[in-house]
Structures are given as C-alpha cells and as structure tokens.
Length: 314
Image (tube, rainbow, N blue to C red; front, top):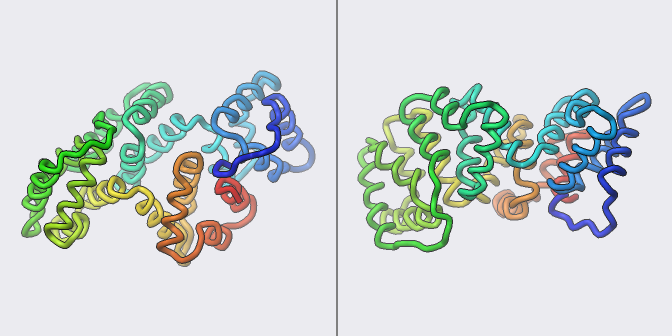
C-alpha cells in the first residue's frame, strides 16, 4: 500500500466495489484481486469503498470478506478495512479478554498515538462498545497494572518538543531511587511515565543512562518483583523511548524460527502500514541484517503473505 505512491489513476469507489463483487463470485474467491484493490487504497478510499459497496449491493463488505476469506488472511484483511481509529478500538477490546498477556496492545495504542489521536480511538471505543476504554481497562486489571494502564490511556500529554532538562535530571534521580536495591516505588514511576510528554520522558531516560551507565529497562530487571506489571512497565518505557526500535523487536520476536506469531505480526503491520512502517522497517533491518520483507516472505505463506507484502509496498 501504503508506503508506495500509486502513480496510476485510482478507480472510483463504485468501480472498486464492482470489482470486489466480481472477485467474490464464481467457484472461488479471487483473493489476489481483493488484495490488489484493498491493499492499494488508503484509509479514506477504503471507507468510501465500504460505504459504496453497501449502498450498491445491500450487504456489508466486512461481513462478505469474513465469509469469503479464511485464516490469518481473513483476520488481517478484516482489520485493514476498518477505519484506523475503529481498528485500534477493536484490537484494544480483544486484548481485554487476556489482558495479562495482551497488555502490549494497550501500551502501543497509548504510547504511539498523539493525544488527539488517542482521543479519537477512545471515541471509537465508546461507539462500538457503549463504554469507555478506561472502564474496561479498570474492570479487567488489578493493582499496579491497572494503575499503569489507566494512567497511559487517560492522560492528555503535552505533544510538543520542549524539554525541561532540570526536570529530566531530577526525575531521573527519582526513578533511580524508585528502583534501587531491587525494590520499586510504583507510585512515582507510574506518575512519571503516565503524565510527562514523550520528549520529556526521552530526556529523563537519557539522563538516567548517562548518570548510571544503564537503561531504566535494565535497572527494572533487577527488581525482586517479577509481576506482569513490571513487564508492562518495561514495555512502556521501550515503546516511548524509541517506538521504531520497539516495534522492530516485536516483529523479530513474532517471526522467530520456532514459530511465527501471526496475531502480533498482523497487528504491527496492519496498524502501522500507513503511519510509520518505513521507520520500523529500517530499524528492523539495522537490528536483523535482513529486510522485514525477506523475513515475512520466509515465515508466512499464501494469500496472507501476499497481503502483508502488499501493505509493505512490495
């Protein structure tokens, strides 16, 4: 898609809707035709196609895709055609069902969106589930994990680049005191990562490393408490400190030779194909010495592989 500039004239929504219907008809679905259309349209175009398809044929495009496709390809495509805010809301809600394992989904949504974007995701969540994202986070978690995730999804961070270096140094000291001797002052850590701007936090993380020759995430590894909360806290720090590097590591872990984690692979590629995948791909290649496209081509197959490759611009 989405990382490539399409030079040819894009068909109208009605033409794309008609082409999709043709791909669904006959003895079997023409999956490559579906990919050629939907993987090469941006979010606005996909929304128009979805609305036009329903108007022309009196059926939901999403439901038709669910009935025509299958497996990882079906799940990836059905997430892809959703509005980006709605897609993140759907993924957040799915994560609630196993939040002890799926907390990275909430952290990624809170940590990579701007404050204005996060509000739009939360509005979409309201519409879809008739409750707030905060309500479900609170209901599905307990203790410090609840406090951390609620802080992340509730805050409206300053989104500028201004940094107070005096504050960064003082809060780096607070963080050091909070994690020293293997014990954790949870309240102070949550306050800092849950309220400060991303630019301010990056400055604090940098000051910590300069002063103590170790990253905050490594310092947290020495904590005597090995709860899900601490894993979530380390995930939060990594995601905010360098999102491209963080997602490159998530993708490497999802494509290990021991077995591909298709759900994680789908989540990262589909959520970031139109946003910041170029930076993630560069970070992946720098860390892995192979391209993301090469790894996906090796570790996936069939229409699912074709679709992911199309989203990456191949």
